[in-house]
Image 1 (cartoon, protein in one colour):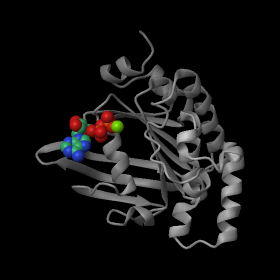
Image 2 (cartoon, helix red, strand yellow; image 1 turned 135 degrees about the vertical axis):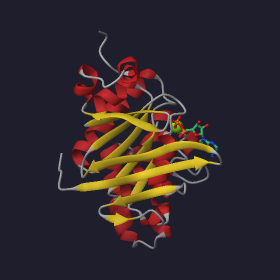
Image 3 (tube, helix red, strand yellow; image 1 turned 90 degrees about the vertical axis):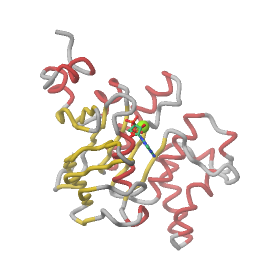
Length: 242
Ligand code: ADP
Ligand code: MG
């Protein structure tokens, strides 16, 4: 883990939809190169928090810094983040190669640079044979590799994952879990990964933020949370059976 400083800093972040408060004065510092998992039951605010970091939702209060820069009101594309969703969100009419290059073409990246980055991502994710196929001709696992590749080619500082493996069967989930772990070792970038799956959290995270009702209940290394949960909720959700 290459920890040179703070990568993402969330300061007193609150978010309400109308009168309903979903995130409450939340604070979280993620170190550079750290793999943070946001873990909690459905509806606890994980996706909302991730979408605030990505800039897909406007915060009600608070500030978000990425690499020391206040990005609270920056456009998503200017934040240096790449996001991978559960639903893949690939363009169905485009080949894998076009899906990978789309964002770079829009940004005006030079053709040979695009080709270089696609070749590298395709090699890392082992999707070279799939480049001329369309998403409909791919398995779920292959689609998710392409979705990860789209963040990879953009050379972002921070990867955000929102339950990327939830649509896959158990065997593929286990396989991709290992691949994501290896990817992180290789890239050494910051990853913020949302899941409700305890095993994913335990195997992937440097630190786990256990959430309930829009509040981080505990932020610690997996073993610490497992052995010393701070309250009954955390114990019930992740702690060792007493
Ligand atoms: P999680 O990802 O942990 O399952 P979410 O962040 O999606 O949870 O949702 C947190 C809470 O906010 C839920 O109670 C959900 O119903 C509510 N919520 C999410 N998005 C909206 C929205 N656009 N409008 C109103 N309420 C929302
Ligand atoms: Mg969610």
